[in-house]
Length: 292
Image (cartoon, rainbow, N blue to C red; front, side, top):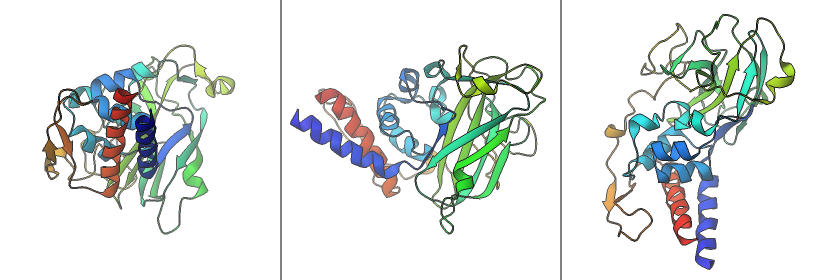
């Protein structure tokens, strides 16, 4: 038990070091069992310990996992967080409704950001971003109040696109260019009705489920592919030039069958200190499960 307590303490310290931003209002998608099955055990424990982390950190962890499925994880859509884990957390809005956001930004890192309605099937932005920043969480000015608290107005021309649970999400997207890190939070919602209203239920999860996924695309047109090059104020699927295959390979060490991983674990020897702490946190969370 003493060993477990020590591991837990270390995991807590590691997780505090790397999380930088997440939407707290409205309640955003969180990791669950569907996320674990698609993205792997280490990534799951890492995000359970600190869901504020960045996508590049998740991919660094994925390199050391034998149970990571890139296609099923779809990490550039809502950080891989799944609608199946968040069916009880769906908001019901009306066309033209104003939605207030609170974002917890724990550290400034200069970049661009936006909030958009995303089609989860194609992982593309529907229409224009609802709000954009060209200088978000700047190191020079610090995190401004307007970076953390703001409102967006839902489009009035969505038609039936977002009427079914799982079809759309409100995505907060922050690409911290200064450190090459990407943060996303996705709010599941449905939209229906013909006028303003539902203010009372907008702050409460709807009884039915609405799903959505965060996607990235240009703000100049509807349905632009998420693989486009990053542009100021736009959503993008990945920072320009970033690919897991382009990163230096990690050193692999064998782990015995009786160990938590039960396979080869890749120890990152390249990347930022934050990415390494990210990896340590996920590994410690895995050890906790098997020593408890």
